Amino acid sequence: MAWTWRFEKADGDETTPSVVPEEFTTQGDAESWIGEYWKDLLEGGTERVKLSNDSGEELYTMSLREALDA
Image 1: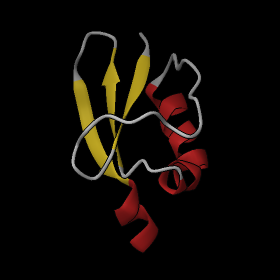
Image 2 (image 1 turned 135 degrees about the vertical axis):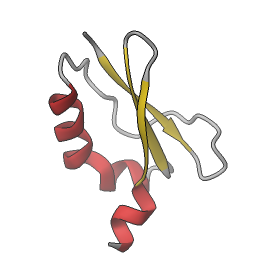
Image 3 (image 1 turned 90 degrees about the horizontal axis):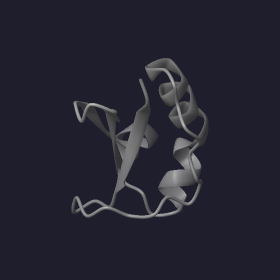
């Protein structure tokens, strides 16, 4: 199964990430990657991300701004 991130601006419009993600074969790999690069993504204009699997199931949406404020 493949896992992918959707990168969005604050208004929900999709945006091109400042760091290009690799292909992820596990949910854990995708989450580890976002944990490593979330600050770079936020600085590049991504405000939130959505994790989905290759069957189209959206697992969750996460605000990068809230992670910064935490």
